[in-house]
Length: 145
Image (tube, rainbow, N blue to C red; front, side, top):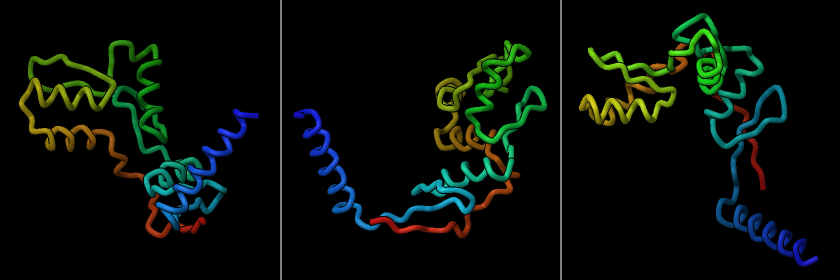
């Protein structure tokens, strides 16, 4: 009984916090299912499930997918990509490779003297889904209370 009361009390204060502090939260809704989110980037990612869009392409083969994380898993688990990585340094004489954008960015800054904002722009641009047909210009907002 005491554990249940603590859980109820925690939920009550948490719910009270959300309503009191954040008030009227606007959620974005999928037009095809019950999915809701506060972030347009999450809705865009979700919409790829309905559209079938696969904007991420493996740099080593013709594999395509809808999420960058799935591309990372593909490279890590594929037997044909044993010595390959998503991020491979192209600087002359450098053989650095990694599957994590954060590590590659740090490498560019620390080893090659790139400015942090330039390195970030370069790394994020490598796998930015430029030809992604999904747009979230007028998502259907929902108000919760």
